[in-house]
Length: 242
Ligand code: FPP
Image 1 (tube, rainbow, N blue to C red):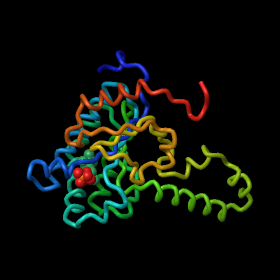
Image 2 (tube, helix red, strand yellow; image 1 turned 45 degrees about the vertical axis):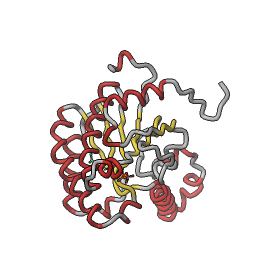
Image 3 (tube, helix red, strand yellow; image 1 turned 60 degrees about the vertical axis):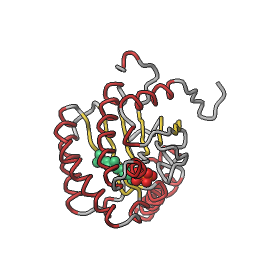
Image 4 (cartoon, rainbow, N blue to C red; image 1 turned 30 degrees about the horizontal axis):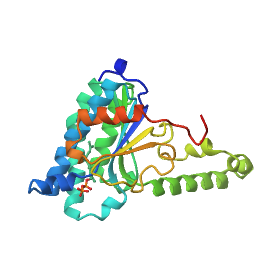
């Protein structure tokens, strides 16, 4: 659906991509096969987001907890990220997509970090859509890190302690890994699981949540558009009375 025909388009849509392993198992294949197919769903959602006029699309690609998966699967996923980024970047750039990675990059290997840096530099000037890959990310990690940064600033500038401590919620946002990125309007989780799994705990405070049964590799353009349709019917009150 083109942006002209859809009302109330969310600025930022975020996806908790779940169900790759089950999708593969249903087909008698290795879990990694589901992750490969999941990249196709990411591509489809990027296209649908651009068509609908969504400005930020983010994906929860790997949580801090995912490091505890079998080493073989972790390595396969990291390899897949490098491959997917390298393969898609020219096309993303040509379509005006700005690429970003948010998360604990200290835990990523050099090859992946180098690929991420190249992709971010290549697409930094684009503004049609910002695609954010949350990688080695968790909400609690982000909030704790932000609190540490705030404390460090107070230690470095004791004369500003009062000013820093009296900053409101918006003032704290600047310490988060997502600084500068608007909070998600809509968070979609696939595969029938109804939880946030340590994702965007601060930023998702007022996000609309949508849980769908579709497994991530089956979540394509049509499903993305249906999610936007659901969102367009939501009544967001932010705790107020309308
Ligand atoms: C969840 O399914 C999926 C993941 C943990 C990884 C998803 C990552 C990608 C699709 C790669 C995208 C990367 C780029 C850079 C485009 P699961 O394994 O938890 O599935 P299950 O719940 O059925 O076991």
